[in-house]
Image (cartoon, rainbow, N blue to C red):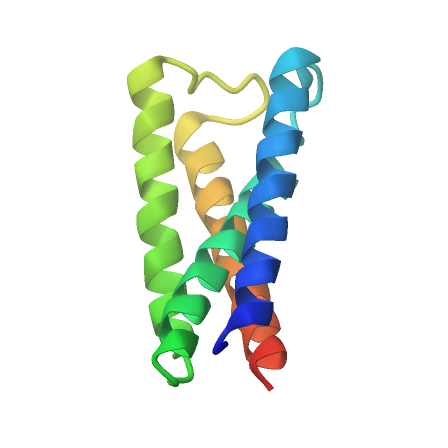
Amino acid sequence: MKGARVLAAQFIAAFLLAALMWIALWQTLYWRFWWFDIPMHLLGGVWAALCVSWVLARRGETPPLLWCVVFTLAVGVAWEVFEYAEGITFPEYFSYPIDTAKDLGMNVIGAVIGWSLGNKLRT
């Protein structure tokens, strides 16, 4: 099956993201550690890039880095809008625009990692 290893990596990333999110909310980690959302955004970027990699692997294509980054940014911006709409955008240590830029930057770094991982798993 084309892209099976990429799909498996995507499921692992999604499971880790969901498990860490559940633990973080249960243990109030986002409020206790200002930096906790950094690895979460990085992992979210990996997951989003693996999504693009898997879809294109199924079609027998190699995903361009730009597509992975653009899709990841779309997901990241949607998440930031969700945070704003829910009123959870009041970081103690950063201003909101700086926090948002940091979050989107981590998404992009995760996208590059996910793109690279997806390409390695396809071969």
